[in-house]
Image (tube, rainbow over all chains, first blue to last red; front, side, top):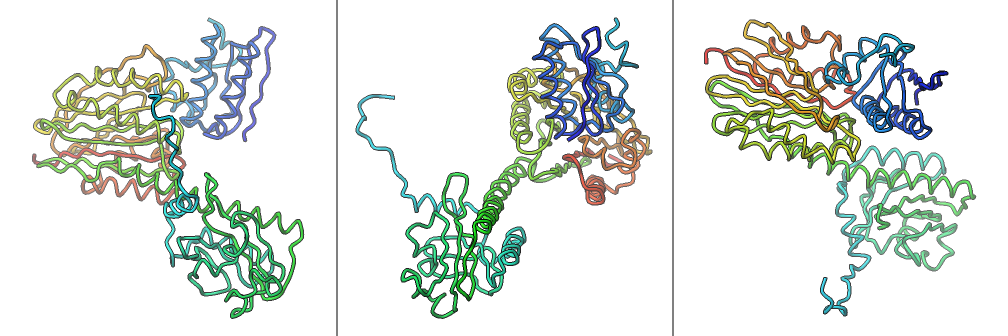
Length: 111
Length: 402
């Protein structure tokens, strides 16, 4: 299990911070967590990847699932601060066009 | 269904027939030691401090030992087993003193081998069929307390897993391997060959190739995740791509066929909450003209005759992400001496630098003698570092001077 911190900003944006390896096992945890956030009405979500050391296809799948759910609920899921290793995954799959990496968490929902 | 046949009774398979079929579907064979079962019997002998322990498979009129500790015995007639003499072979049996129980006192194990204590827990498959028994034997009468009984049941549950789960996975792996091309494509001037190393028994990676109209149609897919779920989806993706083979080798734009395949797979992928990355290429074996579509893989490398390595890129996403996506064909030429490597991201984990991997992989492809040599180098990497994910590679080699 990896640790995933969650907190809500005063403006209603939920910030999710997975720490460690976002692999097949952790992806299940991530998926469930994002589903709960959406159920609770938090459809604007930032995933802060600053402390995510590894992302595999299952981890990417959990983020894509969260993105779809958030958009269906009228919100969005955005990612911020990926490490170079994790950024590679988004670039190779061309998912960086849909999940455009943001430089910081605070402004991820500006513009 | 019609209503005229209301009296037709359902076919009843006698319990023993059904049980025997389940036993025959095991991939174990009499007389072949199985380490994963030996672990359990060894542990049982130590925990219960008994001289003998066994995992017996009830096979027709025989019981043979898939694992046995303390005795060198392959098997015995089933009617000479304790479980056969019990009122039922499907419940835990504990015989505290075999010599004083008329049901068992005349068994050869008691009269000839001096067995005075027996405890056996049936081993079932997922359908409830009794496949065999985990047995404990002692030469002195004894008892098992409640805690020991619980331990015996726990060990038996583990033995059931080892008996059946690995059977299913071995068969699944065999089926999955049979879906890969049986041999390389070798035509004058060209070799196409592939390799797939699943991280688990089965995996979500696949590759496929075939030749028609002097065009080699090559695909390599990677379904999200790994294991059985990914493998099931992967088989479907492979079949969908195969369905476009005639069109592809006849020259239909790969972007069009790939988009068709993606549309047909979308409902399945969405329901399974999965996605697939795919590389698909059509290589003209007469002139080296290559058409390629890259659905979110980004893992295609051209290595020219002089060793220059170029990472082929695309703008296209995986199948199953966005319903409105479409895919486009890109084109290049393979000249004599050039090589094209398509691979899955499991290979990146095996490299020294998974981010800046082009130089290392380019050198690997360039150095190799031929296509099989490239795959041998990939295999060596897999052996040197345990793969975390499925590792798959397909290499297209155009020989020099052709």
